[in-house]
Length: 577
Image 1 (cartoon, rainbow, N blue to C red):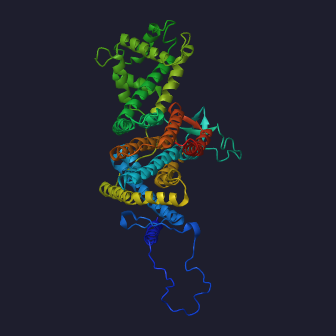
Image 2 (tube, one colour; image 1 turned 90 degrees about the horizontal axis):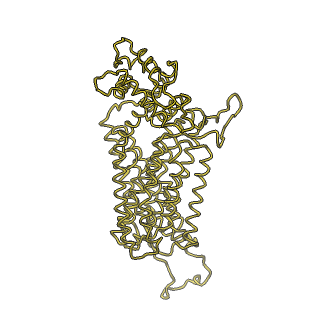
Image 3 (tube, rainbow, N blue to C red; image 1 turned 180 degrees about the vertical axis):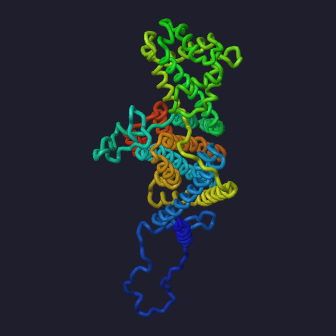
């Protein structure tokens, strides 16, 4: 870590020395006296580098930043500015992590700040220069947006599947069990394409669905091009801008209130699992079935169970007796408060609100629970000739609880010095934002100059190279966290990937649409929009309805990246989009 500042200073000194120089060639004037040697053959006064030597002057950004019109010179500037943008992204990432420790999970620490570098690049690239310059630079910004989205959902996604893989048992990942280490000298599964993979929770699927919704403004702004209409393009930009802004606000509100929603869903899943545990326990203790062939409560059996649970024989089940029942179930696989669980069960049974459960209330309550258990299973599994569906209901509620569970396996330690941590977080965020804002415009200019010098379209430079600089810090963090090989760590990793893409879509697109609308630019980014929409919808459809991803899914993700690049090339240079 101690070498980073010295490297940054060295690079800064080097590229500040790359300033335009002016010289005066020494020619042979006619008024000079010859010494008899000027007629001979002389070598060239300058070393010529062919195509690498600039013949046109370049314009300095801000009037003092270094510039060059040569390919090698601009490549060097791209590396320097790219490294500075990497530093900016690193500082923003570290600052957001510190804010995450102070403020807890939410929109600020987890998703908004990591997208700042892309936003700053997009904003600066379109706010400066003439209309023609802004149009060219916004194209670079759109290439960065498309490249970031594709890279996160293909290369980074597939890499996370590989590093987070563990053995799949009944299509569910087993925490911490990875057969890359041979078992008993034999590699039983290794990199099995179907036997190993990653499991996530249900919230990760929800994040993937939200990511699909975030592409709606892209579709709206692209409709005039699809319909070959020129009159409604400016209006389409305005509608897409409003829609994108509304989605941004909605997503921020969702991130703020999502922890509360998650807690309520988890509490319901726990209560449902306790219900299934009570039914399973009562089924074992009874000498008959809990329900009749017609699906109604078996009063004779339930009456015997009621009297067995009524320890003080007062004709009522009290809170303490319900508590004893729940403790007897021994639901050790989930973490719950016994007193709260007993109170919730009393609320389900107690229709007259006297905090006691009578025999009639007990029979009616158990009957309601049995009906709910029957509805949760398929008709061929919920026949009236057996109570086996109660066992299936119990297993189902356990899986649902695991999907909703968001409790961490790790103990979160308190912050020793919150004031210093807050100051450090703000300092890192300010430093990262300033670096990104100052060097965004020179970076975009270097991309344009390098494109001109090499005849490589600026879109492909921004699509391939820039996302590596702006997203590398987030990618490394995601890969390291996924390597813990836990369902919860994998869930958080993929949720953050989907969340980062969603935030890039709604936030960066809002900035681009605002620039295009305010400055009267032309929205001509069909290939970029199409590749974003296709990749987002494909990965969203893939991740929205499943929570387990075998190892072979990483291969599909990796293949999407070159296919996306080839797709854009065909659209631009074959179909002329």
